[in-house]
Amino acid sequence: MFLCANLPHIEVYVKKEYLYDLEKGHGELVEGVWVTVKSIQGRALYFETYLPEYGAVYDKLPISAFVWKKDYEGEPSLEELELWDCFSYDISVIEKTLLKGQRARYYSPTKQWYDGVYMFTIDSANADPNRLNTTFSEVPTQHKSFNIIKLNNGYFAAQPNNRMLILDKSYTPKKLKFPDFKVSSREYTVEDKVKETFGDEEEFMYGVDEYNENNRNTKNDPFKGTSIEGKD
Figure 1 (tube, rainbow, N blue to C red):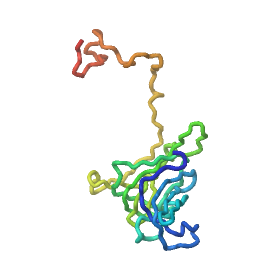
Figure 2 (cartoon, one colour):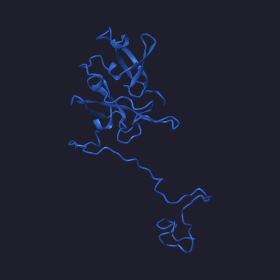
Figure 3 (tube, helix red, strand yellow):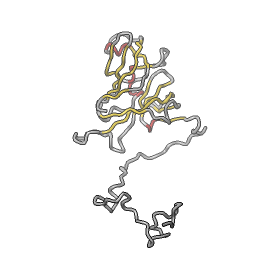
Figure 4 (tube, rainbow, N blue to C red):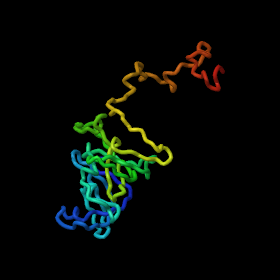
């Protein structure tokens, strides 16, 4: 999606000072429901929220404006909750089935671990080939996802894969190994490696040797190793 994408139904509380440009309303909360997320390159994620008490839709608030419970803990900064600004105007939102509802942890800029539950992921690309790509969204060493985590302290966070751990009750062992991996820097392709071309082929199984008496039971027998091997 360009610029805006729909979000799953998630009920939140908006810290009221954000509704008054941080000038008043501190310490108060307003009930809300997330509507969309907006991605503007070089800025933090912006969330659009429906405010039932007012019948209003309020846009362009950062993730630090929201909590999911009234007895939230502390006042973490936006930078503590979201590590990177948006990489592109083109985004998608996906609830990763294997991860949804799993316990999650992330390591913050202040060198603290925060615990919570994985919710969904916002990812980005440069979707329009006719538009000059000035983003980092498709550069292997720079691309990041935004994994949205519902934190135990009442806040939400948007963190990349390389700052997050998923603790699956069934799969995760009691003692974890440290993921001392290298950043993926390669672009993997296959079509630039194939020496043959098939543009003038009309056969359905093009590029596959036809079965005949000359290749029966040889390495070129297309049926070798199957239940019809060597049959006419």
